[in-house]
Length: 406
Image (tube, rainbow, N blue to C red; front, top):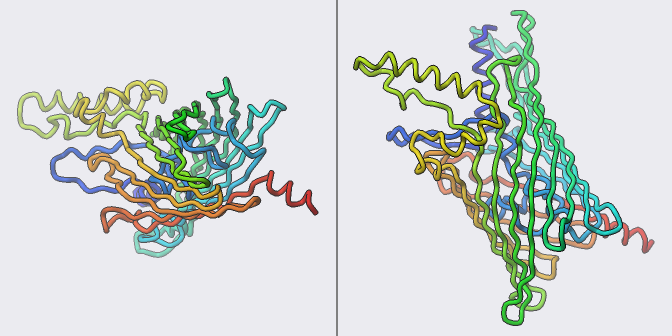
């Protein structure tokens, strides 16, 4: 098997894993931010997905590790564990999925600290490699996974912070024993830092809850799929959001939330932004400028890339604004037992064009809660359309009470 076929196979796996789909409009403005391990950007749980992929400032639950781990310090339960499953891109294939397990445990006597952990596994299904004649050579099961450990603590009665340390492994290559060329998985390390502020204003005669949150995630090393060559940026992300909960009546609450996201990754230079193919006397200089710009982008450290990401877009400030995604969501709660959710996610057409509605519901008992969500893309051709997610959460206080009664 030649290297061209191998590169093609890995490229296909990467494209399938990406949650970004769009078409060029012909205006040469389509320029999404490119990262490795894009599966880290897929929301793992049904609750957040149902509200348009948000959760940085909503009330703490077992899946806060992904959205904002500092919320764990304000969790009401002593501990909880959640299992989530998402069949991915079912309009294209039927064996790609994301599985996630997350949980936390409050520690100390002051009810102001928590440790948390999560494990996510993204399977790209079965990929068959072939030789030039079309004969099958290998059957592969590429995947990406991440495991992390976090700590959160209240710094005051209304404010908390949290940190997470993460190990990432991406196995999208394979070994070609016939060519003597060995492909190994790629590893990376990253960290998150987050904050959460909540207060209880009284509006009229009703006590409400107003929360703010932020999370800078996946700040770490680059990841390489080619034995140390061609490293890619991790999907370092800045998430900001707010959430407001007010009572409609006894046992009836409504929460409105907003999240803003921006990838803290520099935009890769494009040939089209340089007059490389021009016939003027400066075309040679433009070609050299483009080559140098790509080399600088490839050699840029992830930390430098974070600062560069705010000022590197070829279209200037207008294009920088395009890189921000918006999530709007609402959650209706009855007696903390029944939940209805809806939301909308928007990404600019030139940065990926993911635009979809989320719908979902949940039902909770003292011991267990079941949540489900359904995605409706605004474009009928989107492979994200009709995506389902399921989350099962176990409350350890409820389990303790259940077995204590026995």
